[in-house]
Length: 411
Image 1 (tube, rainbow, N blue to C red):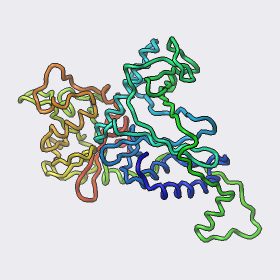
Image 2 (cartoon, helix red, strand yellow; image 1 turned 30 degrees about the vertical axis):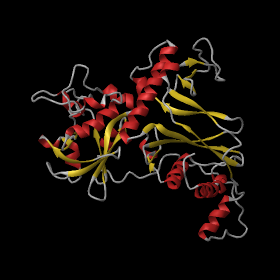
Image 3 (cartoon, rainbow, N blue to C red; image 1 turned 60 degrees about the vertical axis):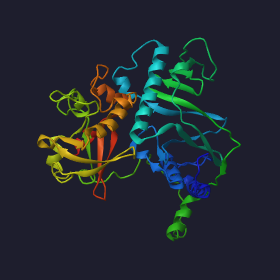
Image 4 (cartoon, rainbow, N blue to C red; image 1 turned 30 degrees about the horizontal axis):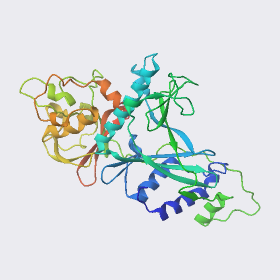
């Protein structure tokens, strides 16, 4: 079990449960999943990754990635929950096959690639990572933790809905059920969603939670307000906004989004950007790369970056290194580190988690191919979010598919 301030964790859960009647009439306490993520961060000192839409929701010192799940379990000792969605990959045709065994293999490979990509981005060790689950039951909640593992590609076997091995790759209710010898999975073919079964012990790590019969009265007490005489309490159930309400800041002042593809063609250029190592001219070394900066960024937000060729501190999301960086090339079209291989090392290991780390800084070989937009789709990211910090330095992280187009539309 991950070390946390259990007293604070339990008491804040109880406080939230008391207000459960505002959002649900169920006897199972309503605890919002984003609240659980924030509570975990608060009581462990972890870095919050919840708003980043990654495979991990928190990062603990030592490279421990944490996936945080919140779900209900009225009965039984297991529950199947979504762990990945592959809408963009499906749209690209990655799953276009009638062979269910092949399909499951492609889904498992896509899951592993995305997890490894996010792990490379933040310097996470898969072997040390865990799932932290808060399972809501009637009258309380169970804390369950288990290893966060890649899908074992060498041990994929078909199962039925109960997780029992079967002879062929069955297809029931639009889902394919399978196991990798470590966990039970199902893939929803129409929704392109991968589900994982979480097995837990209902008698262990139980936190008893009380629901208040009149949560509005609690709110009145909180602000010191007295209800008007003779007025009855309405039966009020609020619809909770489930979207993450964290503020990114002001676009152009606090952050900008940069594409890893050409805004002219929508493709990744074969000899520039993350493929600068493939450019002609002088001899190149594998890993030379930069982040493209569209002209519109400088036009709309001319003061976001320092002047061209002025160095500034750039913090990479893996937390390992801070680099001297600058805006350079004609029209300031490139964000580059002083050693562009260092930026490229981070960018490329996220885009291609299978790359050999010893290749960086050496001449490219025939086995090195230029990366394409399909590679970005595979990891679920096609942009870089650059944040300007209060200390005068900058930080970078990968953004989801479509993040640049959304940013551009708001310019």
